[in-house]
Length: 288
Image (tube, rainbow, N blue to C red; front, side, top):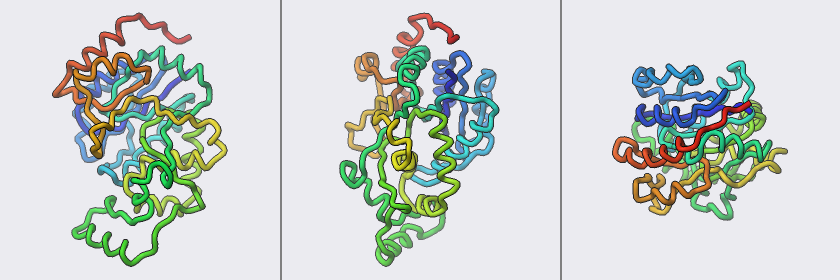
């Protein structure tokens, strides 16, 4: 089995270098999308690994905006046109880190063939805080003076928005591990449903629900596993998850999740050192 990791990043090349070292395994390939606003030359020392590639068609990314969906889709396209067939595509952020050895990750996916691992909560039922993302107009993808004032006027005067094509909206975490056939379907659906493209541009943080929604409303619903395989701690109640430190060592080391987010290797490299001791303590068997 060949696994393609897609990492979306914008900073901390040193952490990214450690992440690549822990992910490197057999014929697996790592694709890196660096935010277009960032000088990519600071990441060029990572290219010495023959299985690491930079996404060429980069996108400028803003937090909560549509353009992160655009960046992900464009990266998917480059992976599919790379000339190699991968069984799974694993979407990570540049602040993630594996909790298991690559051989364990491979074995898990081999034991669950064809399953798609992503969080999906029903927005109108058990993720109601996300309803305004869909029902209201959001201009966070556009940069012009007074945009929030215009947004407020739009929401006061225009009808409540609804998902096009009668789609049932589901989602939660944007990070997932899914078969390549699901990625192909997402790209095909996106290309052939212009109303969804127009709708998504005016939503907030669509990266957290658009991919799950497309797959849930398709023939692939039966392969979806409501588990993104990531340890993410939202206990602080903030817009972003908790950053793991040494205080979380026992939780991280005992977790059966495959990955965790998020980490700050600049301010707390010690927690990564602890994880590395686990990840390199047992020799890995190369894939056949």
